[in-house]
Amino acid sequence: MFTKEIYGQLQLLMLLEQKDSWCSGVELAQASGLNVNTVQKYLDHLQELIKDFSDVSLEKHRNYGARFNRKADFPMQRLFSEVICQSILTSFFEELLLQGEIDIQIFCEEHFVSTSTLRRNIRKLEKKLLPLGLSLTKGTTIRMIGPEHQIRYLFYQYLWTIYRGVKELPWEIEKQMFYPIEQLATLFEFEFTSVQRSQLGVLLFVFQCRTKIEPSYEGSLKPAFEAPSLFSH
Image (cartoon, rainbow, N blue to C red; front, side, top):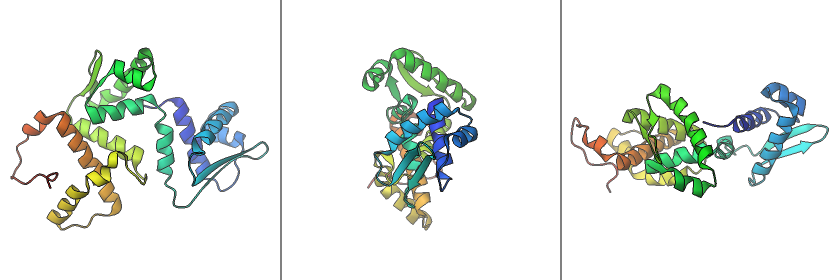
């Protein structure tokens, strides 16, 4: 789903995070499989990106190379997410989750990208969806089609992979899902850990989004017993 530039930047971040001292451009190039010039270009980009964060920094030195610093409690996933979100497919994928369909013309205008560039990225996404039994509709309005449980699982895995470790999950997920999680904890007399709460919050958020988008799917399910909605309070 992501470009080679983003993969390269993520590689460099992970390599630098594992080091307690300076790491030369040659070392980073050998470890990442990139050439030295590409490493320097990606480091410049990361340095620009990181300057907006108060708890982390990326230093560059002509002789010593690069050094990454962060406070002990800073969640690296938050920084990884920032790097990943540079991809136009990330915005496309998240809109598809939230809205269920995307008008290509409107999307391109809002994100300042050409239709041909977006179409090219969509073709890449389609290749990755194929093994999951999923596909995208053709035409000017894009929807994801395939088994509903696969669509939900894909969106859950995406959100959890991208945003786990981030202090504030997007779209106020934890705030929205606080009540249903409390209901489940009471129902099963179970105390969820903070990680389990986040996971469950993301899962319920996906279910809620997909229920709004595809209400007919919910109507086709026959529950084993009647129970009040977790979302009604």
